[in-house]
Structures are given as structure tokens and as C-alpha cells.
Image (cartoon, rainbow over all chains, first blue to last red; front, side, top):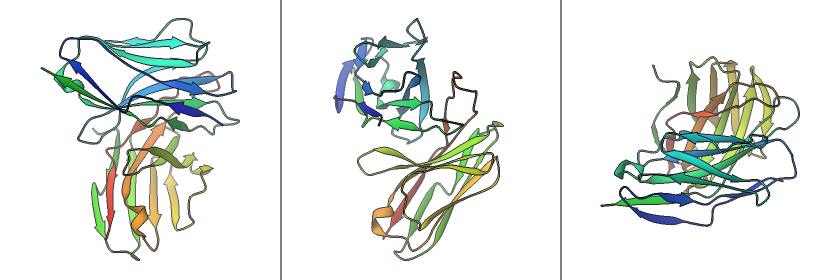
Amino acid sequence: AQKITQTQPGMFVQEKEAVTLDCTYDTSDPSYGLFWYKQPSSGEMIFLIYQGSYDQQNATEGRYSLNFQKARKSANLVISASQLGDSAMYFCAMRVWNTGTASKLTFGTGTRLQVTL
Amino acid sequence: DTAVSQTPKYLVTQMGNDKSIKCEQNLGHDTMYWYKQDSKKFLKIMFSYNNKELIINETVPNRFSPKSPDKAHLNLHINSLELGDSAVYFCASSQYLGLAGIETQYFGPGTRLLVL
């Protein structure tokens, strides 16, 4: 069974500072993908960044980067130069390559980030 | 040009009623999903369809019946609504790219269901 753990229910960060949101995962499957989604107060789920289990380099996407430590089974999201608009819930999710075309995302419980002035 | 759309956005209804939520994607994806987000914000998959074929059914009560008339649409019908069905229901879609493909799921805006 796959499991995603986000141990920080809430985080505060000052504007323009960097923040790291923690995510650890558990799977016995060697092929998997890790995703981060942002859910602002308006409710939509916005895809941020992806890391594949075989990717050699950490993923980056603008101000978002993923600190992927395979041996530790962690995939932390780093947001640099935080902005007020970054205030939202952040979800880490994992996709395991099941047989055939079946796939599903297993989500963590989320971290609520609040960016302050 | 919304990629994944859902209707309605809000749904308030009485216990025991039957209701449907519609989802459409214009991304050309072949796989669609329904997720449920509970009051604690926990997201869990309910169903997945690939090319109109049910692929994943995650032990959801049979009061919930998905229907995919074509690969761009996945509707969710709920019979005999219960208080515990109150949640946000998200539709998502992705394109299967093989075992090593980056299969990003794109979500709709969600449908907020409140059962009174």
C-alpha cells in the first residue's frame, strides 16, 4: 500500500522568504511519481511540480523546487521568495505505476501555508 | 477555454434525494477520475475511467454510480443522499503515457455538495 505523510498541518512564512513543506512517502513499487498541488481558498487544485522516481535531478518550476531524497523517501517542496498569493493548502501526492492503465493519486493530508507581511 | 469543468459548482439538497454532477474535459485525455475531499480536506480517489471503461472503483458505496458516455465526459450520480456525502467532489483527467510517462492529473474546480 502507498502512503503519503505531511507532518506540518500549518506553516507560516514571511513574504520574500523561502519555505520548505515536508512530504515523506512509502511504497514498495520502484516506479512512482510525486506531485505537489496547491489549493487556494477558492478551492481549485492547481498542479505545481512533478518528480519521477528515476529522475536524476531535482525538479524545478519557477519559484518551486522539489528536494527529492530517494533514500529517505522524502519529496519536500521548496518555495522561494514567498508571495502573499502563495497562501494556500499544499498537497503532496504519489502515483504508482499499477498494471495496465490504472493509476491513482494517493494524497497526503496537506499543509496550510500562510504568508505574512 | 476551461480544461476540466464541473457542474454544478454548488449543490445543496435534502437527505434521500438523488443528484448528479457532470464533468467534461477538453484536453483530449483518455482517463478521468472522481475524487472526494472531506471536511478535513483529505482527498481520496473514488473512480477512474479509461476510454469509457471503469478502471478503479475504490470501495465506494453502490449509491454512487459513475457514467462515462464518451472519453471527454464522466458524470457522477448519487442515489439516496446521506449526510456523510457532504464533501467537495473533484473531477480530474490525465493522459496515459505508458509506464514511464509523466501522467499529470488536471483537476476541475470542484463541486461542493451539502446534504441537509
